[in-house]
Length: 276
Ligand SMILES: CCCCCCCCCCC/C=C/C(=O)SCCNC(=O)CCNC(=O)[C@H](O)C(C)(C)COP(=O)(O)OP(=O)(O)OC[C@H]1O[C@@H](n2cnc3c(N)ncnc32)[C@H](O)[C@@H]1OP(=O)(O)O
Ligand SMILES: NC(=O)C1=CN([C@@H]2O[C@H](COP(=O)(O)OP(=O)(O)OC[C@H]3O[C@@H](n4cnc5c(N)ncnc54)[C@H](OP(=O)(O)O)[C@@H]3O)[C@@H](O)[C@H]2O)C=CC1
Image 1 (cartoon, rainbow, N blue to C red):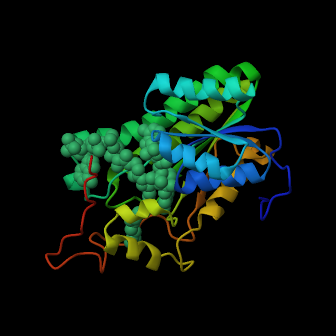
Image 2: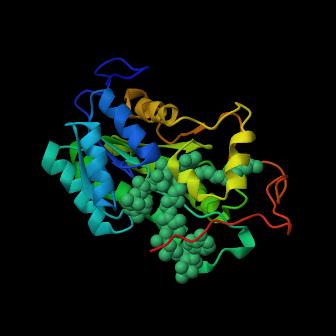
Image 3: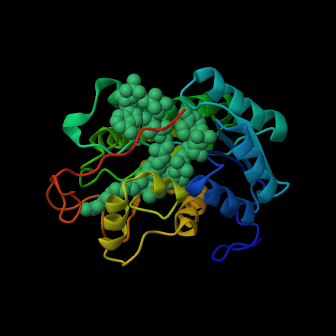
């Protein structure tokens, strides 16, 4: 496969790890990075999802299972890149998520779970990549994928706070690691059409698509192009920056509850709990 917008071989020779690379935005990013000539290691917790994705993505893609929240797993993921390829040039910190619920209903345990995944997992992976691969090699690139918190995120207050923390850490780590040649930036997304959206209540999903001024949800390949651009030499100069990709509407607008999203009782539906 070739990239629709980048020259053949634009990322030739790079080794790139993509967390959450077996599904949705992460998988699309892996496909684009491969199309640009990189070798890609995808990771996530579910082996079967990763194995199937890597099989479809082709021989320059391999996988390693692990939980980004666990330091030992993060180190193992980075070590797998080093063992297989001798280097890790770019880390795409894409694993993340949250559940949809009004702010006043967020339990402390839920707040902690969302923070642990989005802030903790991102920092754990970034630190492992920096310590074990990038600082010793004299350079590297960390790309933090976030859900843009720039206009608040009603229904996802825990994630809004967590993603804002990631943006703050992006700026701080970019400064701290610059002397070692390691760049850190973030891609802050609006709403993209991935299967993960199916877990949100129907009225929420419909409103998400209807209210983007561009007239549609983002396409996964559009997000993937931004990731490839940030993995290119331009990304080094963007160190410390947050690039927003939102089709002219951030993740929220207007009052709560949003028009047309409440049910007969006046409540906005929440996200169903995961089974198992
Ligand atoms: C006007 C504009 C309209 C816009 C509309 C916008 C809405 C659409 C938004 C679309 C944008 C998309 C953004 C995306 O990010 S899509 C990607 C989504 N992918 C994921 O979220 C995957 C990862 N997520 C998770 O793994 C989990 O959500 C979680 C982050 C919570 C981590 O799970 P963990 O295993 O650590 O935690 P638990 O499941 O054990 O839960 C711990 C406690 O958290 C609370 N909780 C969890 N789920 C729920 C829920 N559904 N409802 C309420 N509370 C929940 C709870 O306290 C859990 O503890 P208990 O189980 O003991 O109660
Ligand atoms: N779709 C959208 O509109 C938007 C998405 N985003 C963000 O982009 C990223 C990808 O989203 P999307 O593709 O839509 O959703 P997915 O739910 O498909 O992606 C989440 C990925 O992260 C992995 N993951 C979750 N928890 C962990 C963990 N603890 N350790 C390792 N891997 C983990 C999952 O794999 P597994 O379960 O196997 O571990 C999965 O592959 C997320 O951070 C999301 O919040 C941001 C803005 C908008």
